[in-house]
Image (cartoon, rainbow, N blue to C red; front, side, top):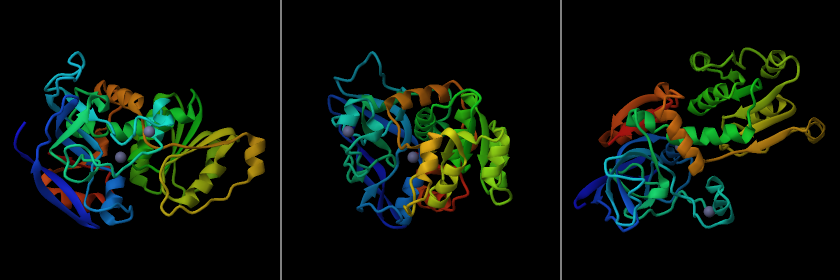
Length: 348
Ligand SMILES: [Zn+2]
Ligand SMILES: [Zn+2]
């Protein structure tokens, strides 16, 4: 395909500009995707505000979906065709290290957010562009939902990975701390796993939504003691699983205390600032408690996230808070960083 396209380039903190560049040339192995929508993740918000340090210029956007518009001669025609709607998986894993080779691309040793993707004028994850070259391994079919809803594929895939890391069982008491989009996706998936979900947040509105999404209990820790309440709900033993989705180290310390014997604590969020936390090693030892970390997702998670979304197993409509035209990316970023939305989505 000939012609030019627009891509949004971060040139410094609080600085983003739309640039004209050539539409990438399709090589034998490439699929050219016309991006329909891309959500603004917390990660891009941190790049925009300067909290997350990247080398500028930088093209953000990693929660993107689109349509196949052109395919190279070596792309598998049994699986892919022009016009198909696809979610784009993260293309940052090296595919060659120990972790990638053992099916854990989410933990790639060389995971590089500043990779320079083929066909783009600058480094970065590339989703804030009109077109993107994508290897077919990173494409995942979806249908029956809007592109805006489909942008939730990547967040959902990460949460799916987290919920499986905790191996939630029927009847488990699962505490989800933080009811932003990531916390609420944990609520949704844990409910699907048959858990008694306790959602915790200081924001009453968000607790209301948690309840609507299936949480059995909600707790506002500014009004009641979270640990005591979880103990009470769980018949005195504490939670089998605790998901901490906040970036606050002090909350992680509280999260650990809410787990019962043989409980699992999953630290889902990245931490800003990354302050060390205290826990009792003897309690951990005697209680056989597990503290786990999780980040990102792999191809398997993406396949299942797109299936669940396409078939309506989870409804993510409540998380698309605002939709902006691509040209208005600066306003969209400004709105996103206010922190009162779930996802602000750009429409290309
Ligand atoms: Zn994201
Ligand atoms: Zn790797």
